[in-house]
Image 1 (tube, one colour):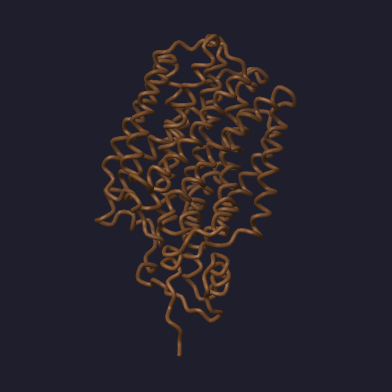
Image 2 (image 1 turned 135 degrees about the vertical axis):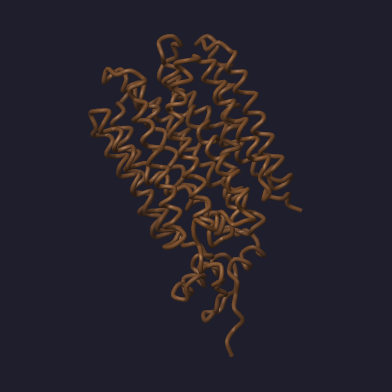
Length: 442
């Protein structure tokens, strides 16, 4: 007599969060730490490149924008690959790609070659994010999903903070080439190790009978008693049409447009700061040193790490609507204060504190947004949904270098900070219009 089919997703949703599952979240987060490091090395190196190569800040704008453009395409491709061939190979292939190309940046001698390699590395950087978020969401019970996804994505600002700290020490002592070579080679090594250690998503493994033996192994490691000959339920109806068009189903189109808008302006805000803050602070009319500018970017990211974790906890207690709208409103206030505060090296402490707080709220909204988008879409189109939202966000990411540069050229530092406060206002309104917010945990 055939055994009753097991629904792997429901089995995980109804169980506890084991040590093994927490280790899986940690391993997934490590890949995104590397993503955050490799993504923020160039902005930290630009002040040195300006002096070494004899170019102006504006001449690096396109080189700064090509990476996000590659990330936009990589997000779409990564989500597509993850839904069809597996989240694990899509994620780790992305890490190998951006690691190898980041290491290759150590060899460049022109802005054009810099721009091309950043574009290609961006394909890997963009592909990592949707699959990491999806893996994290599918490793754990539903009640722990917002925290698991946020703990994975918070690794982006953590990686950015590490990049800022390392750059502040390595660039003055050993130069920017050593920085790129070391970071890229570390990414390659970690991806190689995780290729053997990180399992595929249980939800994805359940789709095809050929993967069921692997699924049994994963579920047992998660603490479930599963027989060797277990049969798993396959949602054939929903699997028949996994694809981009389902993001626009009648009951889902409003949330899709709203989350795309939030990602677009959220990532634009984030990268207006990440791409231009070090160059802004080291400009001759402002006068901060390169190490101080790199540490300012690190402070921006440190704030994001703390706020994202606290935001994830808040989402579980009060729901995502209240938690995220509150952080967005606080980010607008911080940007407005920075707009009217003179940037002066004698005010370093207060400026770094404000950057820390601003980074906390902007990053807090951006990182928890991944948990929200994972909640909006069902499992069979989750990677596509996350990947599409991130890809749209990357359009804002691409435009951030130009938007920030234009704001600086036309409005100075005041216009720069008011610009990203305005962007966060749009994020707040978009998040307010989403229907499928994460409910408070009862």
